Image (spheres, rainbow, N blue to C red):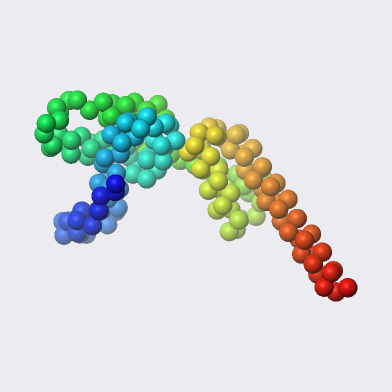
Amino acid sequence: CALPIWPTRRFLDRLTNQHRLADEVLPLVADHLKPDQLFQQGAGAAAVRRLARRVGRLDRLLRVASADRDGRPPNPPDDFPAARWLNDTAAALEVLDAPPRPLVLGRHLIALGLRPGPAFKPILDQCFEAQLDGRITDIDQGLALARAIVETRSEEHTSELQSLAYLVCRLLL
């Protein structure tokens, strides 16, 4: 269950006017129980990548989780297998000290011949979700997925236009 973070927000607002600090701390507080939860669930790489995206830095999350755990007896301070697992997994996925960065960017869509606009966001979002899931792991796979998304959308658009043209013709006849 998610813990309410409003007490932390109020505390940080009284402590400092640095909103960026609060923006970095709040996700760490909200998700500080996730290392244990993911470990117990046997979560995979996708869950670790998504957690890194949400909290920003898993190394900091592990410090907060360890401090919380150390302050709750009877937990032995050095017995935190979930922290070791998350640290090792995140390091292997290269998301320990930074969230995952999208492989496919707007410039890649431009290189595919698309014009910048609102249609970029859903394409980039789909590519990033596939990256977080582990379905794409390099730029070549990302570009192939982007091309497939563009082609599918183009086919859907063509089909919609054909349907609309058919309806207009039926109405005019």
